[in-house]
Amino acid sequence: MLPAEPQRTCIGCRQVKPRSSLHRLAVVDGAVVADPKRVAGRSAYLCRDPACWALAEKRRALDRALELHASAQ
Image 1 (cartoon, one colour):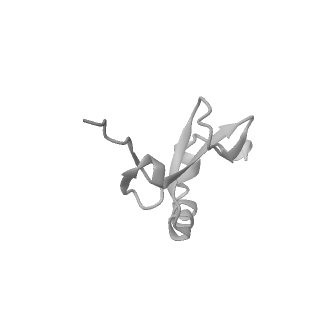
Image 2 (spheres, rainbow, N blue to C red):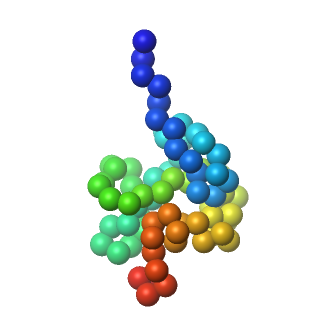
């Protein structure tokens, strides 16, 4: 039996989805970058749907998930 694919929660819509269907964002050298290579450190996942990106921005979910502060942006 194959192991189940890891599940992650989108910080925009808060739906749990397979990790492969989400974009991973991480903080690298103080900047938020798309992270296809899975660098170590704090990260967040977002759906590929532009509405989720807008919702995450409106809720400031990315700032919270990545523990960003106003002075770091």
